[in-house]
Length: 166
Image (cartoon, rainbow, N blue to C red; front, top):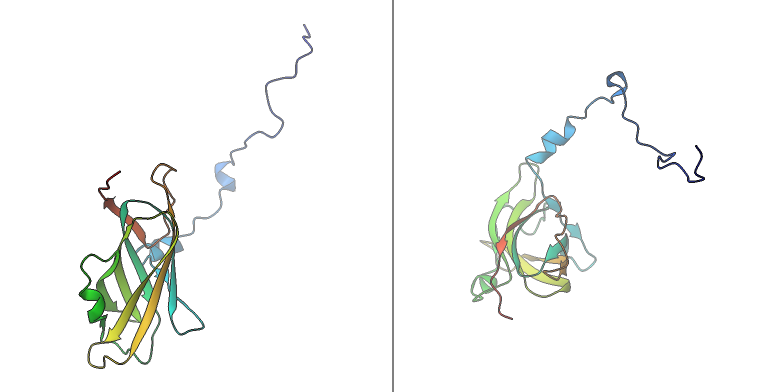
């Protein structure tokens, strides 16, 4: 009995491949899991830019990035003493370690407080030569707390929610 209605099945259905047709697995991503970091990009003014992607307001993040070998810094890199003296910085380096392939791996803690495109800055210096330094700018797009959960980049991890007053 024809009713004149279209069938509820769609013409573009989902097809699951047979086991013989399965593509070979790529194991190379397992090798990259142990060193998930964001690469710092050199800028024209000599600073480096770290793009942390989308973050959520009033949350604390651990951001790990790699800085290539900077000849003026050498391997004895630390955070600028002026930044360590700041009472409650939104961005602070918690660990700086040399990498076997050159450069350094920096682990930062960032507290996202305001919405919009934000940019924070760190200055790294050589422990023995304070006159040689490099600026690192961290750039992120901070979403309002009620606009959903952002998909975090490799090298970015949410470590908790900050208390806020409103």
